[in-house]
Length: 147
Image (tube, rainbow, N blue to C red; front, side, top):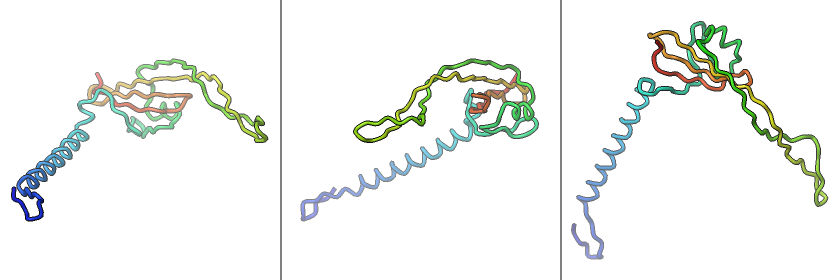
């Protein structure tokens, strides 16, 4: 550390040391994240995907159940459930307040059918968990190797 005539202190050693530490931290973070993304399917029990290869084609989010059946065949198991949800709807009815017209939201209960299909293609392939809502594929998760 040295003093300049203006009263400012300059510490070149500390500034260089801090810059080296920041650079090494950035490099370490980049390498760690790269390794994390490369090894992700092997350590995670389930990981999400937007599309996957199946036996006879590629399945993608938004596919219907018949499309998935034609590409992947019959699932190993199917779990079905129903959920009741509240949906916000805007009818064509207008309400007048303070000489202005408004469309008030209407809250409607709806039942949603949810199905989870499980595929086990054997010990050489990953297991697939497919989630359907209202007959549409909304989630593709890949698990560990099958059995």
